[in-house]
Amino acid sequence: MSALPEGFEDLEPWVADWARPTRAERYEARLSKTYDELAEFYDAIAPRAEEAIAHLDGLDLAALGDDDARLMQLLHSMILVSYAVNVFQQPRIPDSGSAFFDMVHEPAV
Image (cartoon, rainbow, N blue to C red):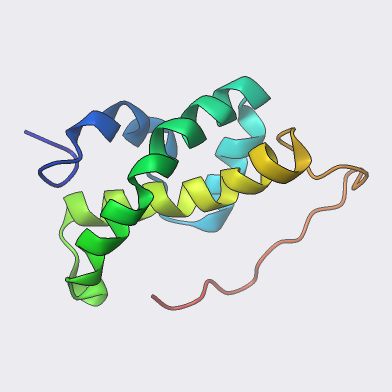
């Protein structure tokens, strides 16, 4: 049985680490990885992002099945990782020391 919608099976190796329901969990995953691991994840997901977005656009986001929800979580993780890969070129935000912004309320989907 597939963890992702039909047609996205090739992204399943990333589900265990990156299909996280909250931003805090996704950020924790980002900080636990090396830059090379982040780049590998980003390079696998980014080319499929437009196709995944098109698939999800046709669905009611408030009533996603588990497989579609995991696909959306992979996209959310890709976005969070994109800054580390394309801008910072490291898992942490440069020159931020131990500072951390903790979101008090997650935006509604």
